[in-house]
Image (cartoon, rainbow, N blue to C red):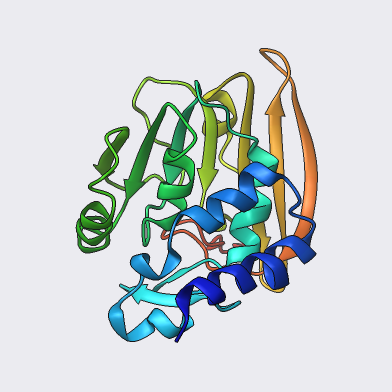
Amino acid sequence: MNLEQARFNMVEQQIRPWDVLDPKVLDLFMAIPRHEFVSEAQQALAYSDLELPIGEEQTMLPPRIEGRMLQALDIEEDETVLEVGTGSGYMTALMAAIANKVTTVEIFPSLQATAKERLQNFDNIEFLIGDASHNWDDGKTYDIIVLTGAVAVLPEAYKNKLNLGGRLVVTIGNAPAMTCQVLTRVSETEWETETMFETVIPHLINAEFSEKFSF
C-alpha cells in the first residue's frame, strides 16, 4: 500500500471537504505520518475515515474531526496546551508540532506508554497520568484546552483554566445528539461559544451521563 498517497487522499478527500481549509492545519496532516500512531496490523486503515481501536476499549478520532478541532483552536507557536486524553498520541503530535508546550493527561498507563514511545522525538510534551474527566487541578491555566473524548456536561473547571483569549474544544452531550464546540475566554467572567458540528464520539472515562432520578 502506498501510504504517502493514502495520506494525500486523507487530506484532499476527508479533511479539506469538511471545511478544513487552513494551510497550516493541512500541512500538519501531510507532515506527520498517521500510520506511525497505530499498530502495524492497522496501518492500511490509518488514513481511513474511521474510529480505529487503540486498546483499553478506546478509539482514535477520525481525521476530519481532528482537523476541524485543530482549525478551530488556531494554535500559535507561543501557546500552551492541555490535552485531556492522550490516546494514540497522534493529536498530541499535531499540537506539539505548533505549540510551545503540550501537557497531555491519560487515564490508562498502557496507552500513555505506547504514545510516549511514538512521541519521543518531541521535547515539548509533558506526560501525566490520571482522571481529568471533570478537572485537572494542577494550579495552571492554559491558552488551549482539548478534550479528546465527549462529556455529558461541560466541566466549569476547564472554562476557568483558560487564559484570556484562550480556546477550549469539547464535544458535549450523549448519543445520538452531541455537538463539538469551541469556547473562547473573552473576559474574566465571559466566554463566547461557537457550535462547529454535530457528531457522536466516545465519552471520556467517567464523563458519561449517569445521574439517576429519585422520587
